[in-house]
Amino acid sequence: MNETAGETVSLKEMPRKQRRVLGVLLEKAFTVPDQYPMTLKAATTGCNQKSNRDPVSNYDEDDVLETLLQLQERGLVGCLHTESGRTERYRHYMRHKTALNEKQLAIVTELMLRGKQQLGELRTRASRMVAIDSQEDLRSELQALMSAGLVRANGSLERRGIEVDHDLYPHNENREPLAEYRSDDAEETVAAIRPNSDPVVRRSNDVQTNATGGDGGARIASLESAVRELKDELASVRDDFQSLQSKFEDLRRQLGG
Image (cartoon, rainbow, N blue to C red; front, side, top):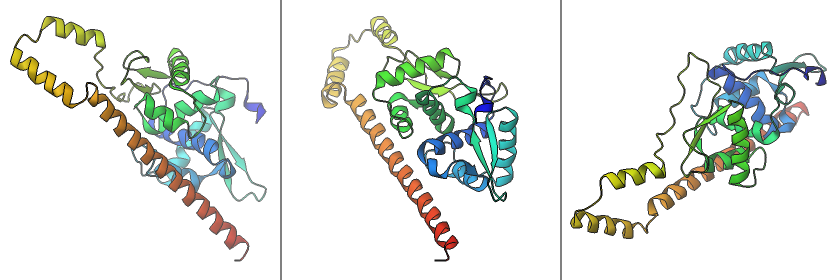
């Protein structure tokens, strides 16, 4: 609705429930547009689904309605009335009220719904909503979000193993701690200060390195991350199928089938 455009709304100081409810509206607008805007019941189900959520919540409709009203007061959500006047539906105004592009919206959505993540996981999950063609593409969008104060990281985005998280936490909510990151420079410094002079220890390290193929630990971590991503995608497909099945049953009942 174009009348909402023109004002920029701050996303800072957003409590957990607001992040979850707004994240659900954003996610469903991207992934199941035929079921959007959302009813209160659908929004509640989306908040509490088991996949693509961390932590898993158990909100009731009163919780979600109160949160939707709070988001309306912030100018981030609107309530629409159907022609029958019996069912209210809710939509987000993030495209009108922020300067974020589609990729940035998908990234922020994923971080609101799942919290801190490594870049590979984040790109796979956010790409369910908007295609992010490469890690470099992801880093570029993340850098813009970090400059806007909406995302934080535990080191340079160019380094392997970096974690990122949204930075929308209110002042009275503890931020999710990011993993302590030790840079390559720090590792080299430790090695220089404590050289491995014991030949027995050196041989032991050589055997361990050969057994893991030099960079085996990183490869194992990468494979584990890929498996988690595939499980997430499968769970997401299952959720979408169940949602479509429910919609089909509703249509069949309406047609008297």
